[in-house]
Length: 229
Image (cartoon, rainbow, N blue to C red; front, side, top):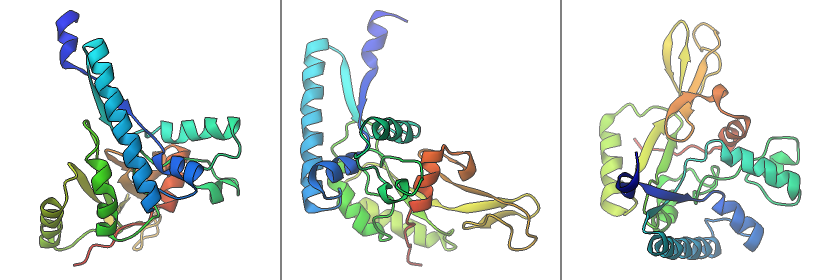
């Protein structure tokens, strides 16, 4: 495909590790007032640059909270080799031998809070700066038994926040004998068989043990949200 066909395609610019940029440059995380202000300034600067690139090239650009499933680990690893003193998302664990990772895009640290609405309050002004794909993942430890709770949660978020996309993801496990089990179970509570624990890495659900080692370290630090039933 040639020429005008590509005029309908976006050139995407993404970012990774805004939280760690705040830690390294400001000594504060992205959830702090200083970190929030800095992150908004960076995203506004990126938006202005994007418009400049569009005028210069005639191509359309967007800013996206890129999934960075692999690069959140790979780039942290490269940075640590070149700049050993740089702070990664799991600095304390890294110093004890864990693999490093960066927090995805301008998300909060994965262990920042278990309060859904605190997280949404801090993400709303950032998520709305993106012109391309972006999402806030709301990880829950257990399944919600009452569908009305999910309905009310979705309604409350949509009515009170401007962020364009969010997901609600309970953790679950699969036993080869008994099938679906809600929550995180590495062995079946009924028969003791080894289970596969499933969660959302970035955009889709798959077994945690199949994630790259950086993402597995992220999962270990993840603080799951509490949904009031």
